[in-house]
Picture 1 (tube, helix red, strand yellow):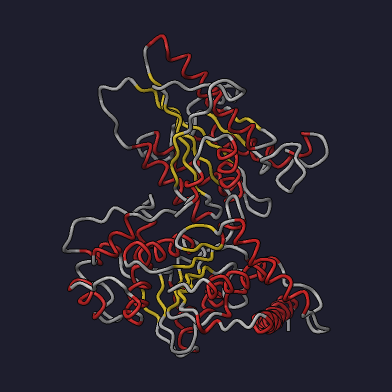
Picture 2 (cartoon, rainbow, N blue to C red; picture 1 turned 90 degrees about the vertical axis):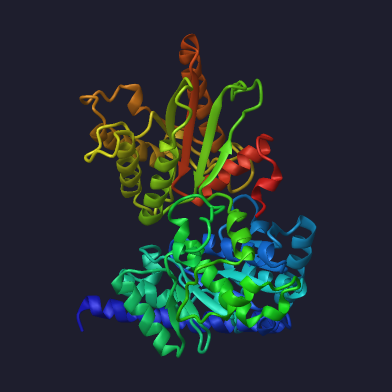
Length: 532
């Protein structure tokens, strides 16, 4: 056996050991708490891109469309850890979260054994906590998003009514494997014998692996159709989540909800109309029908999922370091926590599409675009920035390839720090600013190089169009954006031209969550903005 083969075999054995030990630990934790997860009626969703959005659509359909009491477990959180565990679309209240937390903590702490001496790791503990909350709160349905992978994920202790796999791609290769075959194998680890499964359309390699996994688990796997196939004979459904890519997530959610409702129609408290009966009587094999019931339409159109294709009009408070924006000002934040090449590409197309939306031809509006970016250091920032700059530059140059327009008018590269000088993990670390922002300065240089390639500035790196600012905190990033917007506004004032600045914030959910946290702290956003 060659060294690479030995390494692969060792890694496979390690993963198998991890799966066994995880299942034992989770099962023991649930037993100590006297929790029978079979009492939960679950929808379990794995995937690389869109699994959170799919869960949000599922939750919205079942709650808004059919009046069911829902539990939703997702990760990561944006601002508060309580967001990971939601009842009827709202994060747990602080008092409720604390009560359940200490009940679980004290019980597990008192039952530590030689076999499990340590407390469950962070995500495992939160998974146990969520399952307890959902059982105690007597939800009608629990929608569970996988953390990482599927087979060895802590959520894989549930016994779902139906499973779903969103779009697959490359992510967490150190844990899931380097090929789509391996990644799909891990994701398909949530399949259970006799439990129907649905998937978004996949590439050949991933699909073959998923089908093999379904066969081994003695279950069916059905590919969700194009979203338009669900409602051929009715007006277009305007999804509550923006972006063309959300149609795939919505279609998967429709398939999952239909399957769950078919098996739980007795839980629907409201009257089941003729459209519902017809829709729910169709077979999984035929999958799509020609008309969505109103409950599905309502859930899809009213769905919200903070931090993903979220649009906020930012109006900094009068005075202070952030400056002031007038009534005629337009400073818009476009937040999307995309952090893989595939998701960043979809995000860039969404942003470009928004920027292409025609306004009033008689308006005197000067359009400006700003990028606020950061990503984890285990990501290839160069590849993510290449996707962003190529697509946005092509959009600005009318779709020409190679693009000849500068992708953004300015860019800001920030850390994840939200409370400079504060006592917690979102605070500035010790050391000189130059050291704390080393990663951001490297990314800014990559951006300048890419922007130069896409611009027609003859190599003038000093041009305003290649401006890339590095800051050591998210508050400083928002201040920099506001300052730049005010500069453009004052420059345009003599011409009686209004400035519309569109700010794309992307690269990480931690960055997006940090922006939302700062906006909340500045009273620039209501707390309800984090509700579903």
